[in-house]
Length: 524
Image 1 (tube, helix red, strand yellow):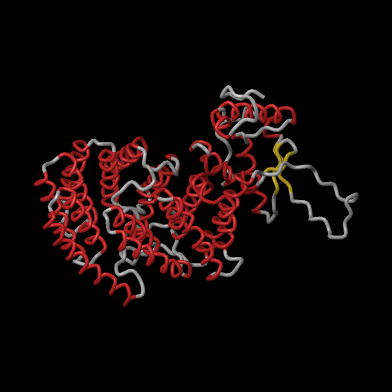
Image 2: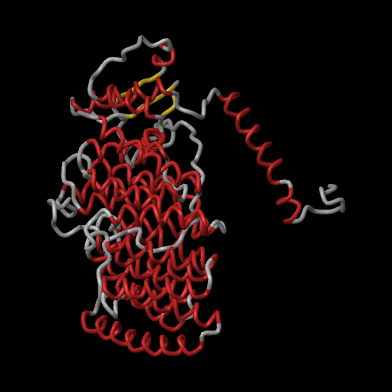
């Protein structure tokens, strides 16, 4: 064999990598040829899916279990659910109409295709005494592990979510009540804060905080809120993006702790048993469909009631963030946000606030791409909106805007301007949160780090002493409470792009909220 590199002998790993696109193309062609030869169509057609869901619903109403076949081939139920998650809005509407018993407005031009759909009661399982000659088993293609694992995870999560909401384990609070999801967001934020401290040179304190997060993971396991598993999954991705060894260590720790704290049949143990098969690679590759499946069902439960609570705004935060990172489709984001606004699950004021938060992500992205002037312009727009609100409102967003101005001035301003912005940030943080709050400590570490960078040694040393004194207060509060000293109410509080947001997706989100608010203005 002559390899692409020009040498003779066996192909090397580099040779295979160099030819990967070509090999992939050949494999795709081969599978398509086999599917055609065997009479198997890989994709479910829209008309077929609508017909299956129509028949399934009718049979369920009559108390009949169902298995579906297309052209004599059994269709896996998980595959049908995946089709539903990813269907275009027009197809989703047809499916919903069919499930409600409605007839298609347009006569089908594919009656022959629909005729190939058969739904019937599953055959009974063969008895243990049956012999091979008495039982006829049709050959089937085994699903590859890289597809099987996420599909099984999605099914486990769907069952868990439905059970948690149906049994009252998770409830959407009434307006003004304590938010149900604060536990996961607080834990996730402290993990992100530990990484921020490390980046600013506070390595010892950063790892101390990360240790506290690992200690508190047990409490999260025992009383998980509705975003706990997504927070766990995202944490593994964030830590791995910083350091693969750190990501592997977290997965190993979380999975083993789960097996010790929860019974073997608990959904979280079932999930970890699947996740460990593919490891970090699988976690990154499967994140999109798993997040989408989870949040699709979560959104249906939330939109079933008119609540207008912190829960709903927090949920919207999660949808926005995951879409901006490319882990959630625009179709699902649009459907959920429009439903929340139209159904008043989030008020107009909340929608305007979420628009400003989306703009903040856009400013952050501009800053990461060395466009500080554009980042400052967007941040000033946000601050102008905040000026129209009472000064005690939206303290988190005010502090984040101050962080951005400090970052901008470090890149395009003078040292004096940057130090002034740093002092403004510290004052706002202390006034808003207190001297030993994690947000104030992070701000201090950032300003101290900048002082050292520009050679302002005296200021850096004084800030270092203040930081260490306040850090001891923070740790004392944590030890006394045996928990995090402060609660974080926003899932998107951290001021960095954790998982590689894409400017096109952020701009899509900004335009979506602008359009929804305009429609709200135009409605009677």
